[in-house]
Image 1 (cartoon, rainbow, N blue to C red):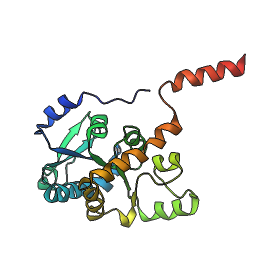
Image 2: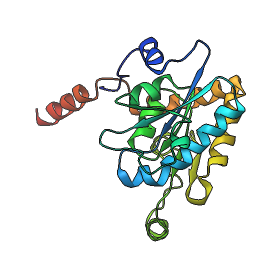
Image 3: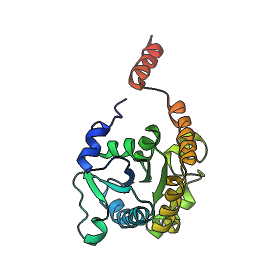
Image 4: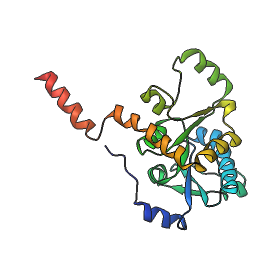
Length: 209
């Protein structure tokens, strides 16, 4: 119910200094410090490759409040626009996104923006997860949809080249982007439209009556 961009698209593009026709590729490395460390450099390099291969593409990294990119090479950070407090705007107005597995993937899907789901953890956590988890997918959009509506690039499969190749194929094919957006519609359909709090309250009231 509360999912909405922080500002309108015209304001967002003006804040980034985007020219007409330039397209945003969203990079969302996650909101925790460990996620940022695991994902940011790879996503930034993927964004740099995409910008080099596709004129008019602008990588935009959504950085969570309280986090910083200190420690990463300056030239790598400078290859993307870095924004704070505009995560939903990036999700909503980007042509496509690469998003660390978590709530942000579901949000991006609900905005209807094609996305690749990425994630990398330490080998021990990965080994434990493989023994415990039985779901065929880890991304929330795929779990909700009951099938892959957003490709998952995980562990060794999460490389800058893999992200750039996947998103680059979409950027070069408007019909594929449209198919990806259409496929995400099942996520919103299964979750239902706005009014979840009201419907939950009505259900509780009905059970208590």
